Length: 357
Image 1 (cartoon, one colour):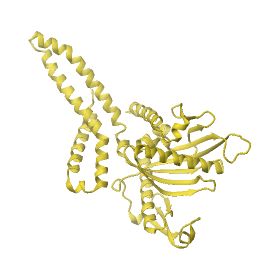
Image 2 (tube, rainbow, N blue to C red):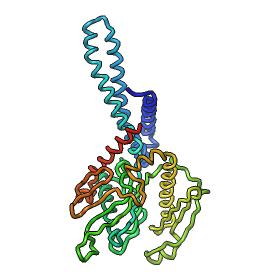
Image 3 (cartoon, rainbow, N blue to C red):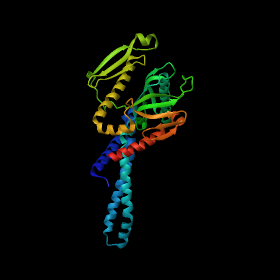
């Protein structure tokens, strides 16, 4: 059965759900669509656990009643209790295991916004084309789930792909399903730039940062150095001559971000702060959860550039995920239908986290 620490945690979740229900019923919250969506996402993340816990408590309560009947002088009641008690105890045990399983991924489900970063790796022009293909794959995946897709920064290459891109993706379960994409993605195919029909290996790297709410990470503005400059690269007279690019440096961590893709300094500043918060949040989360991050990185990766997580083999029309040693249909994956792959990663990660409890 459940230990006291787990029961205490579950009682807290019931209180959290009740508090969220109260906030969702508040007319002032109903008028704020962003706040309403945020609270609804948090409730949806914990509600399955709360419902299972309520079923568990009902089963335990009924089992306690039957235990008292086992001591009854009435032979018929005692016989009924002795027959039903093992079934109820089994149900309670199964429910608590389901609860543990849901609990280890509840935090992931509660994160509804991520920063997705892609960069061309080794392979010259083909690597840029490949990075562009991955960007399209993730955009299709976002469309499949109805997630919001906002390009924050995009640096195209001459062949129609991209050198790098930064995208904000938001929606239900976005971190749980995209959080495993961090790492190096290899492609084996005949590039459009290859005249002899030889298969080349090219790479692109993906980093996925959970985007915190403003209340989750507080950055003192005095700790941030701001530099306003003209934008670099192609883009016409306005981009190159008007000071609209924003560079932020967080002195305590040394983290720097630069945003220049829009012609508005105000919008670039907003996007730069959004990205800075995500990177600073990730920095402190990694420090605070070093032990968990070390074990989990074996599964989901930490976006370290040398970490190959997946190979896309065009000749075999297969995608091989090296963390779970499973193959998936290439066309399905590139079309943005990544759910089967994501589910396999979620299940293995869940098993590892449960084993670590």
